[in-house]
Image (cartoon, rainbow, N blue to C red; front, side, top):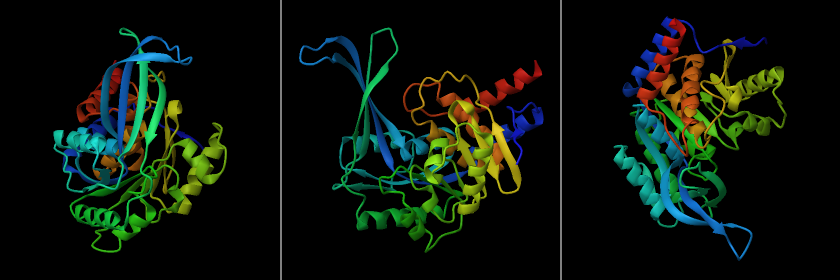
Length: 349
């Protein structure tokens, strides 16, 4: 299959079509079944070298906890103007309480988030070092994870919440980071009863091929290599072959493979693969959580009526915006519309 390039579109009517899709985001409702992660950022100003060991001593200056993992996908959907209904689990601890507080501040419903006293909220703590007027550099990351996946009772509550939310949704987004709130088994149980057959969009870190009945997926290139046990090495024919294998084996309607500074490729059953170059600069500031932004935008666009290439192009715009921001970040509906407007203006000049 030959490569089909989609440069960032030059057609004003195409840009207007993309703008209309983004404008329709507030009409869309998405349920997110996901692993809710707290992304903690601790910033310290470099003070001196320790006498105890050859390490820097940092003077604490700031601490922030932001939604990460599936919670970041939820946050991105909310900022895009989508009506989002999260389903997940947090512990009865500070990171869990702060995640719920963040959701409430954006008026995101939290009734589908299970609070479990026996569960530890997944927390990824990034220690950043720098000087007062210089950039911040991550020096180490500490992950706190639950000792086991959610128990049977918690899993039943997740299933019931997803079934109830699904009745009021246009699409289900599954954000599987491997912590047990979003698994193939839970998804299968959700669809056994009171399921309205809405599309399911998948972002799974390590077990994509174990899922059944998926409409579309958004793995990155390294996840594709791991799933198929191959090396792509920037080889177009291998990339296309890998995409076709996944489409066929998972019986997907569409697939987007993200490729970092090389952009992304959109696959669908009835069209040739579409190669989408990166939007904006390839000198990124921070890639933390960029995949969550991509799947949130892709899902919202599909739910708003876009085909896979158009949804992927909007996701590419959003990804290009978010990687220029520090830390775990989101892209707003206004920012996405502004990016399309600037692209349209650039083509007219």
